[in-house]
Structure formats: C-alpha cells, structure tokens
Length: 197
Image 1 (cartoon, rainbow, N blue to C red):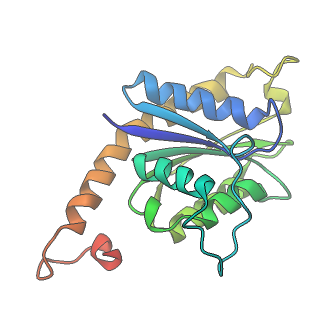
Image 2: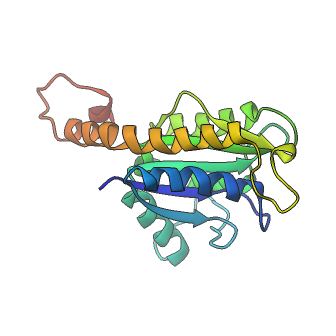
C-alpha cells in the first residue's frame, strides 16, 4: 500500500494550513493510500544546528522514522513574508537522503496572495534534497474559509482533492523506480539515483 505523510508547518492552533493538509491527505486516503499526519506544532523539532549530533534525540528519531516510512508527502505552510514558515524550514533542515526520490504535493495558507512564493521556497528545499514536486500547488486565503474555519471555497477543495489523488498516484511509481535504480550495478547506465548511492 502507498504510504503518504501529511506535514502541517503552522504553529497556530486551528490553522488554515491544518485544514488544507487534512483535506488533501484524506483525498489520498480515499484513493487507497495509508496516511499519517505530522503536526509540527504538537510535535516540534529542536532548532536545527548543523554541528550538533541528533542521534539520541527521540523527537528527531520519531520524525525521521515517519519520513522514511512515507513514499509521498503533502506538506503545508502558512506564507510568511513570501516564504515558508520557520517550522517548515526547520523540518526540511533535518532531511536529505530521507526524501530523495519521493513525491511531494504542496499547499499554502496565505493572507491574500496566491501562495506562489511560499510554495517556491518549499519546492526549492525539496529539490535540493532530490525530491520530486508536483507541477502545481494549492493555496487558500482567509476569504476561502467560513467563520468557523471550514474551507468554503469549492474550487480550492477540488484542487486539494486532485492534489491528494496525484500524490497517491505518482508517489509509488517514482519511489519504486528510484529504489530500483539504487540497486543497479556499477556498470549500468547511471541515473540520478546512482549519484546519491
């Protein structure tokens, strides 16, 4: 079964980001994926310091185990000054080989923009870790939610459903090929995966 991890990169309780990630993750589940959710507000990571060793940190170990488990990801962040949140960036700082060859769908909660800059900063972090990102993202602003915090915009909901479906569809294909490529002999025509092997 395809495994998809949703990651909520907001520190706000009852955040719009939470709603967006959950809708897309539920859509992936409805398409047959096994899903899990990581909320960085309730399961915070320590601030990443490159010179530190985190081998004994149980919080880091748990999250790395979740990331290893997943074949694909739905990651959401609020947009802060045109960037992803500090929590989302800190999450990516702990990762490299764990997300190589895996597929990501991106969602953003914004104050009024299209969320492009936020998603581009997430996309850049993922690409530098050699992950694959869907060629579109989904964003919503405050006007897309009702007074109770529920998503009211049917067009945004439709895009989230499509994103969940596409992560579920493409994640196992890309991950399986990447794993096959990692096992290729040294004299095989090398691809991107052998560069990381």
